[in-house]
Image (cartoon, rainbow, N blue to C red):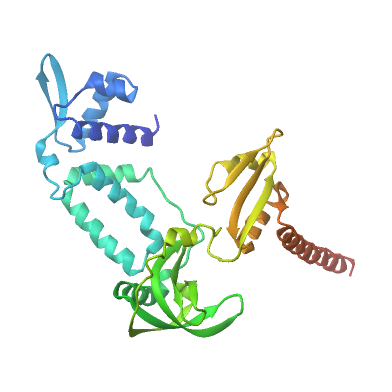
Length: 337
């Protein structure tokens, strides 16, 4: 049996004993975990050897297994052992924020959580932790922008406008802006500032790592009552904002299964076809990002609507073909020389 399966089952045994006032019999545990009582006895023995204060007592002709009350009451917070353990495991998810004040604060919190758990529990959790790994690619090294992130967060909390020098990637140029920071948004490996841009007179999205200089002003602002972040982001396929466009994309049978197993956009509609393909339909805020998403699927995706998106992808494909044809010709010259 895989070590991960055994640890997962033992972890479930701990949860079941903690949630039961009277305790659980080996037969009950075996039935609920769909294994033999013999397996349960081996797990209980392993947990005792690991240091967990597990004991058994006979109640109404049954031998019931429980954890000592000292474990139940050792945690000085209004949460359960399993809830704290879930938070402890969740710390792996926070590595993407490494070297930011968010990470530092959460690391301190998790250390306090860890200190509330008995030593035997920590040892066991660390063993279970080895079976669960998280990966984040691509990601940015946010330690370089730690101070910018801290200042934006502080301004957002205090509701103070900020003046920034911002680098716009598409134009390859810097500009000065005054912004009311409404929210900090983490999406797809990047921190963004969502706020009212005084220069544009509208709500805009700024990548925090492209803010070159920042100054917090003494000017206060209030977020409009009708501003709803979820509604603001709802039509966007990613970060870009634009005019609402209805798109229809056909995905071949090879890709259909991958498309329908995820929610790519709120409000999306999946039209399954008789040949196993499907048509993905959604309303998006501009086509810039969905264009690259479609191209990522190569020949397995075909834009049906709108015509403008078809044209954009055709132009990209033709430009790519031109590059590769030029490369082939260049190699031919080298080989013939």
